[in-house]
Amino acid sequence: MLLTIDVGNTTTVLGVFAGTELRDHWRIATDHRRTADELALLVRGLLAASPESAGAGPVVVTGIAACSTVPSVLHEVRQMCRHYFPQVPTVVVEPGVRTGVPILTDNPKEVGADRVVNALGAFHLYGGPTVVVDFGTATSFDAVSAKGEFLGGAIAPGVEISVDALGARGAQLLKVELARPRSVIGKNTVEALQSGILFGSAGQVDGVVRRMVAELGEATTVLATGGLAPLLIRECATINAHEPWLTLVGLRLVYARNVDDRNVEARNVEARNVGERITP
Image (cartoon, rainbow, N blue to C red; front, side, top):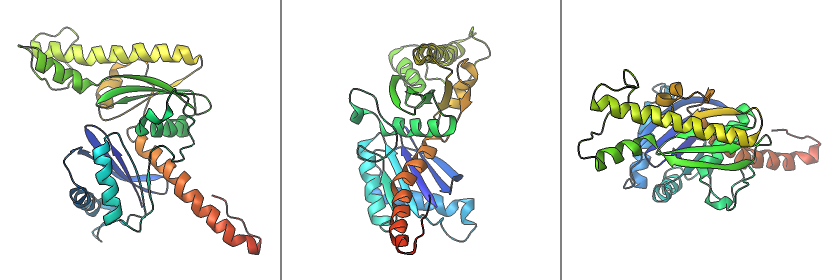
């Protein structure tokens, strides 16, 4: 099975694919202090506990695809792959890795790997143009053209950052649970904070998305992903699709482009002498 790893600033999402089917997935906290050995122990424990193992031992990993927005954690992920999965083909999404996504920005190398992978997954699933709204530590908006090009986007503070900032800077304000209040007009401080954070964030999303769609100038799919998407998508008028595992899907596609395609070409070279050809 293919193990996919998406390391975000707050959470790390892992999944295992059998072919194109996501068979199992996990969401864990991203810990900058976690070593490669600790990561390996955690990953092996999750694989062993997966229903896919059927009590017969850990899921057998035949490939790994990873991306990260946290350089220190990415280093440990690389070390884990080298030491604990040395025979397993591994693809880490970074500049120079084939994604099939043209990046039409001023400096393509500064675009986060997760944003490129999301653009690939979104275009694969929905075509284009598409706007991907990723509700994570930051709320990012990424525009994908009708040709599958990454056009650029916008980045705003995430919902949890807003909660933390209010709690830290407001003398009489609390760090509240991220939940929908009874009404927009809060009847107490907790509800007032929840209303401002939730409905304010939804209004921000709709405002940015509408401006992006106007610039794209075509019928556009607006796709939500990220850990906080379930909390907000009901309040956003512009979002019309939800893919919680979009980044994992994109990682699967990048892996196929970089490993599976090479394997097909190698087999084609071997088959030329007998007049055969293998298609991916």
